[in-house]
Structures are given as structure tokens and as C-alpha cells.
Amino acid sequence: ERNTSVEPEAKMHFHIRLNMGDVIIEATSLYSQGVNVAAQLDALSRSDGVCLSKKICGFVGQKVELSLNDFGDQKVNNTIVHAFDIVLKGIPARDTAPAKSALDRV
Image 1 (cartoon, one colour):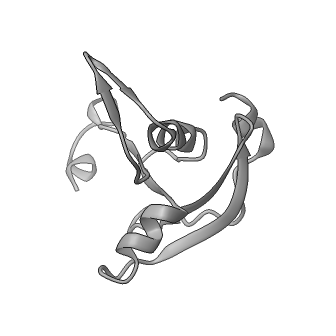
Image 2: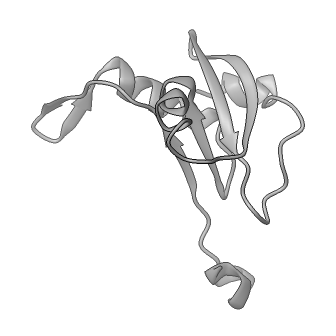
């Protein structure tokens, strides 16, 4: 909503990626497979979008009404991640899974 009323150079862009799992905290660092998957979703997420792992989608899917774009199992950094986009107003839905070249950057 904020971005509709400001100049292009003042717009704020975000991308959110969510996973669920145990986290180990040591000093200022976070460790775990759950943290790794959330980081790997970065390669799958879009600017101004929300990307969910299958694990978090299964957890919230029955509690909250969401429109989801399922782009299936994706290989990211030698790990398979089943991912979804939340379909958001004003953000065009993704027709297909992310391009392989985008996944190879991680």
C-alpha cells in the first residue's frame, strides 16, 4: 500500500521466505536444517513476494485461508525444497517454477 503513493526511488521492496524447524542459537549465529531451508528459499522467492516451504504451508494452511501457487519440489544447493508462493493482490502469479539458473546461484 505504501509503495503506491511514493516515487519509484522511494519504494520499499521485500521478499519473505518462511520455513519451520528447530533452531540452535550460539552467540549471534543461528544453525539448523530449518534455518538452511529458509535460507535456500531465498533463491526461490520473488521481489515483493512471500515464499513458503511445504512444512510451514501444511502448518498454517488449515488455520488461515491463503491462495497458494505450488511450484513443487525444487533442487536448491543440493537440497530438495517443496515451495509455494502466496498469491498477493497486485503481484502477478508465477506461471511456472523459478528458472533453473536462479536456483544455481545459491
